[in-house]
Length: 245
Image (cartoon, rainbow, N blue to C red; front, side, top):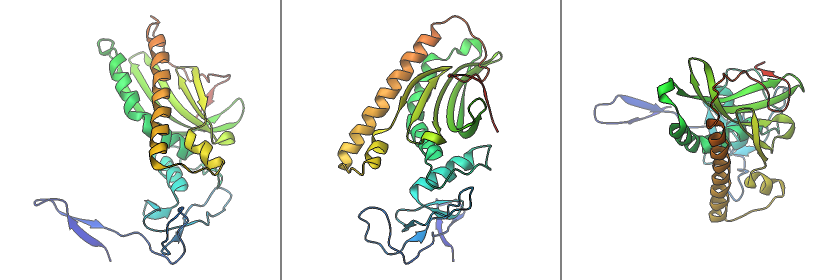
């Protein structure tokens, strides 16, 4: 039965629906709870995620409980116009693109506010994580993008993407230039089953994102120095073109 709370003296009551509670052990490392439920994820081959998570560690998306990885995927899918493509059960591409994009979002927006040419009619466009099918090599990518655009089209694009064929590798592009391909430190640690203290993890993430933002800022500065402003036409930085599937 839903619980209710008030959001303010004059606000209407808001229903708070509790998540499901099970009797399975939680698979979050070190969690002693035995109130876990099975992750709700079902991939495109019809395979279920069989991991179990307690209410403290699963995430609700659309009212269903998911493990942290698949919650990220379902969140990305909910924001994407291409909703029919469900990655393989163990593929982290959309959740990693969404995670890194979210953590870079504030810094990239600040950067765009610094370089925007309002007098030329430029505005900032922020796109959520979306699925992109790359025609020339038939790859499946998940991309988050930030753009400056005016009446001529897109004048600057910054993007973060992860290819499903290598779902640990994050690619950062400014315009048609790939400025880096990098495996985040926490992904590298997980692949080696290494554990670090929370303070070390926070520091490593801060250093990682700081380095990326500096690289992005340098590339944006170089592109802004170029006098030409031509619309971005969807050309892949490596070769060929890509189009939404």
